[in-house]
Image (cartoon, rainbow, N blue to C red; front, side, top):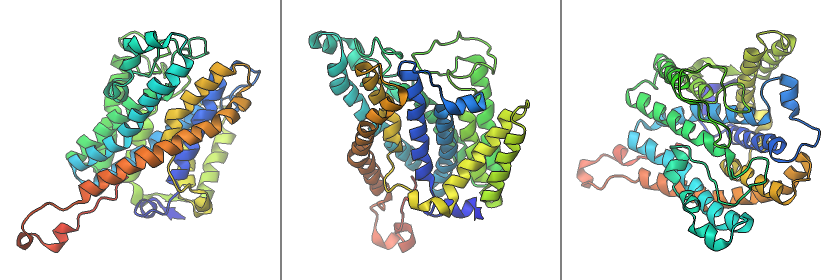
Length: 384
C-alpha cells in the first residue's frame, strides 16, 4: 500500500511514466482521425461507448497536473517563483515548435510559392506564442495540409494549453490566498475552480480545436462537450487539486484498483457506467503512478510534452505524404520522428531552460553576510 502523501514527498514515483503513456495515447487516438478510414475505429471508444484513447490521455494529463502543480505551489508558497516555473515549463517548447512549424514544416508542405508563403501574415502569426498559449490560436499555415482530413491544423492538441493556463491561474490565486495548505482549503480551491468552470461553460463557447466548428455564444448545455470528448478536461485538474489536499488520507493499492474496475464492469450497461468508469480510471492512474511494480519502466527523461506537441504535427505530415496508409502503419512511420522531435525539444530546450530557471530562483539574495542566517541562505527550489 502506498500513501499518496508519501509518494508526493519524494522522487520515487511513476508520474513520468503516466505522462508518457498519456502522450502516446493521444498520438494513437489521433491516428484514427488523421488517416483515411481503414475500416477500424478506436477500440477503447468502441468498448466504453464514450471516450477513446485521446480523451483519456488528456484527462490523465490534467489529473496529474492538478495534483503536482498544486503540490509545487504548496512547497514554494511564492507567486513569482511559481509563475516563473510554469512559464519555463510551457513556453520554450511552444516557441521551438512554432519555429519548426514556420521554417521547416511550412516550406516543405505548402502548395504556395515560397515567396507567397513567407509574405503571408498567416505564416508569421504562428510565432505569436502568447496567442497560442493564452488565447487559443492554433498553428495554421497557408497552403499546408489543405487536403488532409484535418485541413490546415498543424498541432491540434494546442487547444488544451489555454485551459491548462487557466488552471494554473486558479492554483496561483487560491495559493496566494493560503487555501492550498489544508484539506478544507484545497477542497474550497477545487470548488471555486469548478464554479468558475461551470460559469464559463454555460456563458461562453467551450474551447475546442480550431478546426472544429465553434458553437454560438450564449447559455449552453453541459451536453456540448469538446469534439471527440464526452467530458471536459478541467474538472480532472480540480480533482487533482482535491487529491493533493486529501493526500494524507488516500492509500493506493492494487486490490482497490481492481475492485473499482470490477464494479465498473458489472454496471457497464447501466446509467451509472460513465461515472463509475471515471472513478476506476482516476484510481487506476494513481495506482500506475505510485506502484513500485512499474518503477523499472519509468523513463529517464520526460519526453511527454514534446510528444504531445509534435505528435499531431508529424502525423499530419505522414497523412499528407501517404494518406492511403492504415492508422497503425501511419503511427509506426511517425513514431521515430515524433520521438526524435520530443528528445531534441527536451534535451536542448525544455530541460536546459528549467535547469537555468531553477538555478536562478534558488540563488540567495545578495545581502550583508552578518545580517543573514545560514538557514535563510539555504533556499532551493525542487518544484517541477
